[in-house]
Figure (cartoon, rainbow, N blue to C red):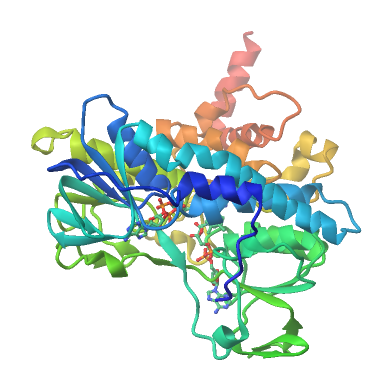
Length: 497
Ligand SMILES: Cc1cc2nc3c(=O)[nH]c(=O)nc-3n(C[C@H](O)[C@H](O)[C@H](O)COP(=O)(O)OP(=O)(O)OC[C@H]3O[C@@H](n4cnc5c(N)ncnc54)[C@H](O)[C@@H]3O)c2cc1C
Ligand SMILES: NC(=O)c1ccc[n+]([C@@H]2O[C@H](COP(=O)([O-])OP(=O)(O)OC[C@H]3O[C@@H](n4cnc5c(N)ncnc54)[C@H](O)[C@@H]3O)[C@@H](O)[C@H]2O)c1
């Protein structure tokens, strides 16, 4: 990976002073902590602040090896969403200064938000903050440098890092990941992005809007494989309309750097030459340096193996966030940390434990249009897999039927709702629309409350809003419920009214 120097401006100085103060002195450890949290990203911060903030006098320690705030604040959600917003506001032709201003905007936002995650703020909340790498010493103790922290309970929240595929020549040619690209100050003219997941799609559109020619190279046959086929197709068309070259079903076989740039060879497509390569091909959990064997913590397919109570194979140690979950989102890390607090600290004799499988987690890919999903959705690869032999019912509302989409000149979009085969139970939904992330909450709420579309049909939606697509889906569902008998009954009621 290319190392790119951090821009030395007042934003970055303020940001680093908050989340990794150079003059920080680790405290003297307590005899035994009620809770030790390893990793200071969203999951770890919520766990530490939650335990310390209860006012119960619990002894809480937080260990972070690099930057408090984790991926989300430093190299993930915050810089990427700031860049997306700056790119949306950019007007063509985009001048090189616009790019520099967009990058300065993300640094400014990050420095402002850093105060919430700062070492000082957590110290003020009563948390013992240790800056350094955590390494387990035995099932009830962890070391940071030469200090030993003994604990009654611990939470592992060490997150993930970019997974880099072993493509011949890639390392020698040089590439960036989300960990380095937000340090750019100059716009690359030609950028190839490897990986058509959320990072690849979001950043492809942002950089294209800032004047870079982007080629998005995806190994799978379509973009956003976790989302529905309709969502992937709409996003691909939107990216292509903005001049992005989307190459799906591609195997990159070799990368070489020459004076002309980086040449990327593919098995299914002629080679392309670019100035920079962004690798966004998935994540690897941060587990290697934790010394998990001595803590008797086992690994699973997603990283640290946990049960439905987010407990590891060592019953005193829990895990939360990206390091153990398939849903790799900040709000999922936050929800998991809250569940861990409940299960680790407030379940005498094991009573009152909460289950992760009961938590509803929506997700949003912040392309334009956005793709917002919740629950089970059909990725188009075997619809009947959820209930053998009985396919879920799909109710689909194209956005062309929604007046607000017409007034706002929305090119394309739709709402898809999947229902249980035999009852009014929402299994999941996808909305592909501008601001879809703001609207999906209504369906997430309905799912969490156990409401079906019949109940949502009674909710009055303001006119004209995008959320009317939910009313239309509910009306469409109610029409499917009209049997001949119900029609006869309605006709009879009408005759006597
Ligand atoms: C480019 C990008 C954009 C994203 N956009 C969004 C978005 O819009 N919305 C969304 O919901 N999610 C988004 N995400 C995902 C989100 O950033 C993660 O889901 C979230 O940060 C996970 O939080 P976490 O606490 O589990 O892990 P992390 O944020 O990865 O934090 C883990 C922390 O643990 C520390 N650590 C690791 N090992 C040790 C150790 N041994 N000792 C001490 N500390 C250690 C790390 O330094 C790190 O600070 C994005 C991610 C990326 C990369
Ligand atoms: N809006 C959001 O909430 C948001 C935004 C960005 C990232 N994230 C989170 O960050 C995580 C990482 O995102 P991501 O996009 O890197 O991962 P991802 O795993 O979702 O997508 C990676 C994509 O890269 C493709 N790929 C793998 N190897 C490849 C290769 N050699 N060549 C070309 N393509 C290849 C895969 O087919 C896959 O579609 C996700 O789990 C996501 O939850 C969330």
